[in-house]
Amino acid sequence: MSTIHILPEYLANQIAAGEVVQRPESVVKELVENALDAGATSISVVVRNAGKQAVHVIDDGKGMNADDLVMSIVRHATSKIASESDLHAIRTLGFRGEALASIAAVADVEIRSKHRDAHQDETGHLLTSKPGTPPTRTPIAMSPGTQILVRNLFYNVPARRKFLKSDLTEFRHVSETMQRMALSRPDVRFTFYDGDTLVFDVRPSDLYRRCLDILGLEGGSGLLAVDGNESGIAISGFVGLPRHARQSRSGQYLFLNQRPIVSRQLAHAVLTAYEHLLEHGQHPVFVLHVTIDPHRVDVNVHPQKHEVKFDDERSAYLLVQSAVTQALRKAEVIPSFLADVPIASSPLQSLPQQTGFGTTYVNRLTGEITHGGGHNLNVFQGFGSTGAVRSAPSSMTPSMFSAAAAPSAVLQIGLQYVVTSTQEGLVVIDQHAAHERILYEKALQRGNGSKNSEQSLLFSVRVALAPSDVVVLREYAEQLQTLGFRFDVHDGTTVEVHAVPTDVMPGSEEEILGAILDSLRSLGMIPRDRRTEGVAAVYAAKQAIRKGIRLTTDEMQKLVSDLFACTTPHTSPSGVPTYMIIPFDELATRLR
Ligand code: ADP
Ligand code: MG
Image 1: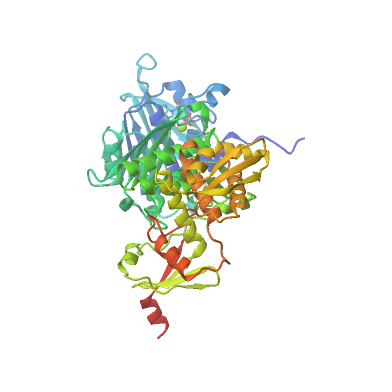
Image 2: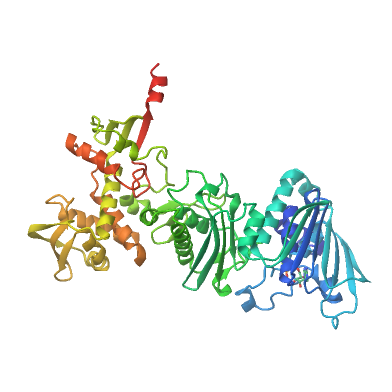
C-alpha cells in the first residue's frame, strides 16, 4: 500500500490559501477584483475590525446564476480563461480560479448573487460555506449583482490568525488597497466604510479628479499630466511637483492595463527624471497607467498577480523616464538644459534590494536591465559611481562663490583634492569629479552651437583601431565631431585625426579617442535622442584630470571658478559629489 496519498480537498485548499490570502487586505483585493471583472460600475466595501471580523463587498456587476454560484468556490474554477492561448493574453484581473476557494478554506463565506440576465435565473441565490463542510444554497430575492460576506478570517487556522497585526496596521493595508483600486478605475464608483464610518465615496470621473479625491491634494494642486506612446506602449497619468515628494513610496501608484502592479524598474525610471530636484531619500508622487498589448506581458509570475514581466523592459523604462521628464520640463520645473543631465548621469545604478532577489542594475542611458549580482561593473568605470547618487550639500549654491569677491587661496592636498574657502567655510573639491562636470557642461554647450571648440593638429595623427572600434566610431561620428574631433576613416582600421577638442593635451589624442571608443562599446547602444549627452559624459570621464596629477595655482583657481560657473556643480555627470563644505560653525565647535 502506498504511503503517499492525495490530500483531501479542504486541506489542499487551506494550504493553497496561504499564497493568496495573507491578511484581510488580500480578501478585499480579491473580492474587489472579482467585482471589477464582473463589470461592476459601483462597488461598496465594508470592513469590521480591519476585516478580521468581516469583509463585505457589494457590486452591481453581471452576477452569477445558481450553477456558477456553486462552482465559484471550487478551486481552479474560473469563467475567465478556458485555453492556454487565453493565458498568454490575460484581459481580466483574475484568472487563476483560486481566490474564492482559498477564502472559503479559511473563513465563513456567504455569497448572494443574481444574474443580470433574467433568462439565466428568475431569482437570486445565497450560497453559505464553512471550511471543511459542503456548502448549501437557497433562493433569495435580490436585485442583480453580487454581495460577498467573509467572516472570522483564519478562525480555523490559529497560527495564521496569530500572525495578523494590530487592527491599525491591518486597516492601513486595507485602505491602501482600496486607494489603489480606486485609482485603477476612475470610471467606477467606490464606497468604503470602516465599520459604520465612511472612509470615502468617490464617484465616476476622470483620473485627474480621482487623483485629487484619493491623494487628498487640494484642488489644482500641481499634478502634472504625463503622456507618452512608443513601441506599442502607452503611458498616461500624473506626477506630483517636487514639493509634494514624500519620505516613503506611499504616494506611488503604477498600473499596467488597469492592474495595480509593483515595478522597481519603472519606479526607478520615474525617480531618475526627478534627479537633482529631490533631496536624497525623497520619493516623488505619481499615478501612472501603462497600457500594452496583453500578449506582451506575463502577469502569471506570482499568486498575488502584482508582479509582471514585460517582453520589453527597456522600452517601458525609457518611455516612462522620457514621458515624466517631459512633463517636468513642460511645467518648467526643470530648465531644458538640466533635464538632460540626469540622463547622462551614472548609467549603471542598482535598484533597491528586495529580499529573495539578487541585485538588479539599470543602465539609465540605454534602459538595459541586468539581474543578478555577478555583473562586471568595471566596464562602466569610465562613468564613475555605480551606486545610488549621493547628493552634494544642496544648501550650497554657486552664487555664494560669485558673491565672494577675489578668489580665496587654493591648496592641493593628497594630489586629488583642491581646498579653498568661501564665506561659509572650508571647501574641499574632488579634482577629478569637478573637472568631469566642467568638461561635460562645456561639451553640451558646444553641441548647442557655440564654436571654437576644436584645435586643428599641425600634423594629423594616424591611429590604428580594432575593426570593432571603427564600427563604434562610425556610429557616433556625429557626436564626436560635435565635441571637436575631426577625422577620416582610411581603411578598415586606420583613422586619421585632424582635430581634437581644445582640452585634449598634445600627444594624448590617440589615447583619449581609444578610451572613449572603449567606453562607448561597453555601454551598448545608446538611444538616438541621448547620444549627445552620452558621448559628452564618456568624453568628460575620460578627459578629466585624474587624482595623482599635480595642479598649478592657476589651474586650481580656474577649476574652482569653472566648477561654480556650472549649471549643476554639485555632482559629476556620474552622480558623485564634486565637493563638500565644512562650515566655519562646525570648525568652531570642533576646535573649542
Ligand atoms: P478568478 O477570479 O481567478 O476567476 P475567483 O476564485 O476569484 O477566481 O472567482 C471564481 C469565479 O467566480 C470567477 O471566475 C467568476 O466567474 C465568479 N465570480 C467571483 N466573484 C464574482 C462577482 N463579484 N460577480 C460575478 N462573478 C463572480
Ligand atoms: Mg478573482
